[in-house]
Amino acid sequence: MSLQRLRIQPRIARHDLSLSLICSFDQRNRRRFLSTTPTSNATISATSTSSPAEKPRRKPLTKEQRDFLSSALRVNQAGELAATLIYTAQTPPLVNAHPHLRPLMAHMYAQEEGHFNTFNSLIAKHRVRPTALYPLWSVLATGLGWSTAVMGREAAMACTEAVETEIGGHYNNQIRTLLEMFDQWEAEGYEVGEELQSLVNTLRRIRDEELEHLDHAVDNDARKAEPHWLLTGVIRLGCRGAIWVSERV
Image 1 (spheres, rainbow, N blue to C red):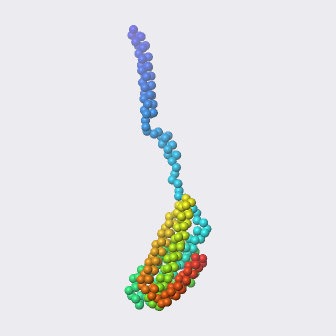
Image 2 (image 1 turned 90 degrees about the horizontal axis):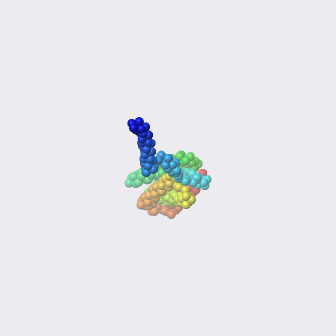
Image 3 (image 1 turned 60 degrees about the vertical axis):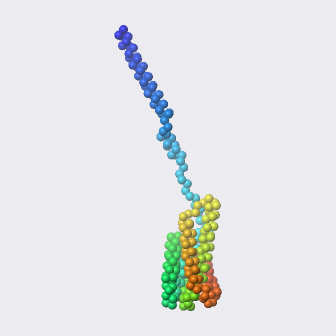
């Protein structure tokens, strides 16, 4: 009887071991299939299928557009050079006769100098050739400033009125051309670069400051200059000619 018990006990032990292994395996599988935690394979798959952020679409400039921008920077630099020279020549005789104009003349000159420095930087940055007529414009601008100041306060202010009228319209035309370009790009699904947007903002700021000078001139009796229509007409015609030439030469 004891011998039979000894033979049966190993069988029971082996049977219990097998049952425990099976139960353990079933529990592990059950926990695995009931778990809500994603597996590493799922994580890798999700990562690999995510698409990178798309780069903004920028349309390359055409030759015509590049030529327009180069021409705009060149003529703007030349115009601001002329403005600084006009005020430099006007200030001594004008302030000697009318000391109260010293702060106004200093303010307008400082703004024109800032405009000139802005376009100097843009010309250098984009490697645009300055106008070849620098020496000529320098002489003419100095002569215009000095002669109108000697003619009197009204004539000097009429000179500013005439110049700023033409320059304000000139900047408006450039801004309008750039905005039309932007509208065309956006209609085609392209984005406008930050550099060109910054250029438009710069042109708007400078235009507004030029028109401020126009208001100062009118407030200081520019339209009392005699003969006003002839003086301003000649100066405006000269400005249009200088703009046309500087865009090309």
